[in-house]
Image 1 (tube, helix red, strand yellow):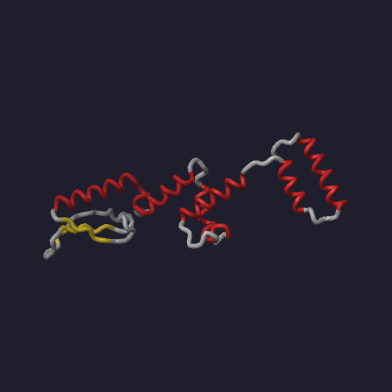
Image 2 (image 1 turned 135 degrees about the horizontal axis):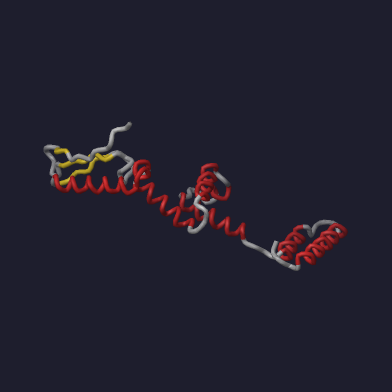
Length: 168
């Protein structure tokens, strides 16, 4: 079993702030291993206690993610709102694969990617009346032969009558 972290202040001679605490990357707000220095031993002990409390509050998450990663994840979930949190994994997967609509953002941050995905999903899921969608389909087929366009119009009319113009 791994040894538990001890954030014990040590004195470093020749410094204006001689009390040092070594903080591993997983607990440091910068995401990197580093030292923090304090003027008194009491300040250093209080800072160490605060880090210990944060580690206990976040449990395992606090030992695997840095403060900055936790903040980014929180922002991502805030952007998702009440959508399925699993969507965040899909967004990241698409960003890493370089999906065109996310790459089109150019130098996008993950926040930009999430917002782009949410916008695209909202547009994709927008409901339209069948008649509107079918009229757009017919306009795309404008270059076809008259007989083909007539058959498409008749088919659309049959579907519209059976659905009474409701959303499909």
